[in-house]
Image 1 (cartoon, rainbow, N blue to C red):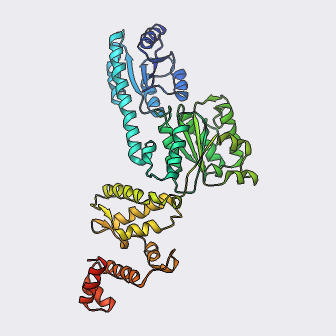
Image 2: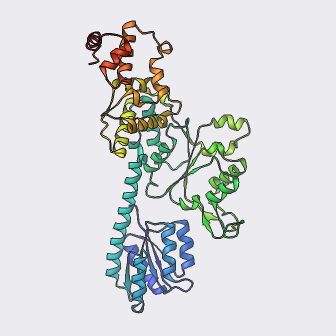
Image 3: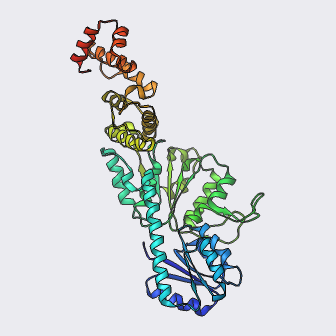
Length: 448
């Protein structure tokens, strides 16, 4: 972890000063607070890793502060500071999620041990989160599959832009991996230990977008029964990924432009500006230059977002990656479905290689997922693929070259064999040839 952030929350200024000085000498970044309200306001803006929390505060009971801390950041560890007369309450706090408790008067040696242990637990949780994200296909460039020049160019650009704290615009058709690229940038950046927050700008009303991104104060509108922290605030120190930015209403584009320029927000119904420390990555499948020309997207916002553009190629432009991707998805869904499907039959792979993939990599993944679910043997075979793909394979007149009669016969025999599940007697009957003739042709074409 980078320098850990600690908070000391105690109504006794002497305790705050002693703990702050000692922990700062040990290399921690420390802030002290004498009221719960001041601490929680700061926690909203920039979360802490460890909190030393007094149970007796002038404006709020420490036991009531604990769940608020966990709601803001579940990875934060809270150490209760209590007098001897409140041991039972301290034990109750541990049941509610506190890391440990320490009695007053505090011993600095005990504080050091607790801080070190709590920090190790926080570090372990953050590492586990990163590993889980990687397993879900979001862990940096390793989540991308492909060796084609087109993808290597994308990888090179991601490596260059990730350490630079600038806004990025990702362009590409649906299914090309825009969210994957955004997460790879975050995972390869100095913000990796802070949140990665996603929001899809399409399909929401302006009011909902405002509430989700900016949050709202209690009573800001009908139904706002409590204060809500928006996604911008929750991502403090991290990255906000705005998917389908081209769908954002013009009125919200104005507010987003203000956020980028001022690096602060106002909650809906709020009056106090809140400072932000976030990186914005936006993505779209639209041509934003065309949208600007049509008046559907603000030009000033376009230039603010488009500091660096990463264009993701459609799958048909890097077909050489199809076998690698197919095998990756085969392993993924073989494990998920607990099926021993170890390979892809050469005829099935030929079909996959020749398909156009209007849905790009996402469509290929869906095809392999379906095939693994339907496969009855240890290989994906043509009959496990969607019917429209099977039909494409035998529509030879649409191919780039016409087939010989021998090749056409070979393919048709193989097709009938697949349909009959390799029942040679039934295959000979459908082809209307003697079984001995079928046997010779199978041997000749290498289809035994």
